[in-house]
Length: 319
Image 1 (cartoon, rainbow, N blue to C red):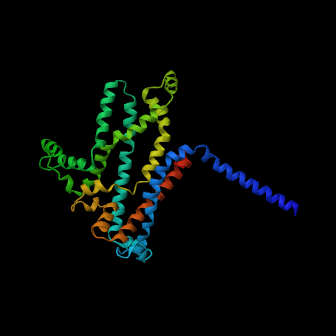
Image 2 (cartoon, rainbow, N blue to C red):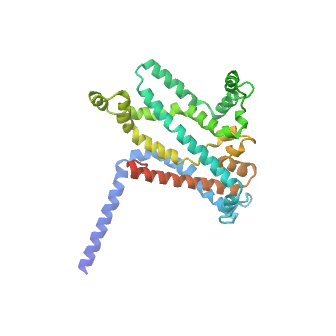
Image 3 (cartoon, one colour):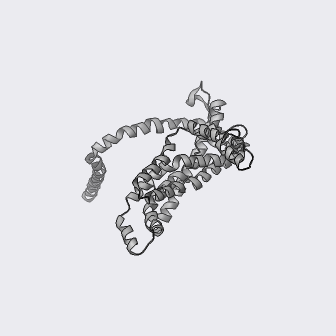
């Protein structure tokens, strides 16, 4: 009996020590947790708490009855979406634009950062940075307006050049085949300078002694870029690749919606614009919520998969 009580007392003491060891870091750094608490409260209230409304994807939502009063329909809305004519078109367009954008837009900021890092003339380097950063601050509406003006078949600069070279004007904005390229390359032009900032910061953290040692060994500038700079920023590249892979299904709504028209829906209609049409314009709230939830789940699966692969292959990951 005494031995059992002694064992129980020892277990309670060990449990108390474990509880105390978990609490001590919070007590020791309570000022830091106090500083970050407004951010945590914001995300809980405005990002996580509203997720209870996701349940309307499984209900036949009626506004007058509210979320709790609406009847359950299970996976009916998902089945309707999977069986619809639009499913494969939306999936193909969304994945096509995202993968195209990832293949073209992801390497460009890396190359730009590597080139700017090699510039030695300070004035010219600042000039290039200003020119490449400036498009990032254009609003999406202004950017699409510029695209329409430059690609106009009557007075657009691009078509004027084509005509001067002996070609025929092209109606870029009404031909489905041009939509993806216009969307992707205009995005690359707008974001490449801004995206290069984080790579420039990573390059600034590379030990200069590595370059000096490479010079002593007779390495050329290109060899130093390949064997010193690229490996030095590889963890940053992997992290940003994981984050980009997690948004493959999240093609931006605003720019696509402003660029598309009835003639280009064949290649321009993506999941986000479809959700807007069905949910806001046609008031099919439950169906639109189901489509949006499907999109988010696929994004989550892609993020976890790419993170796991990166961790196994490169030992660099988000978690």
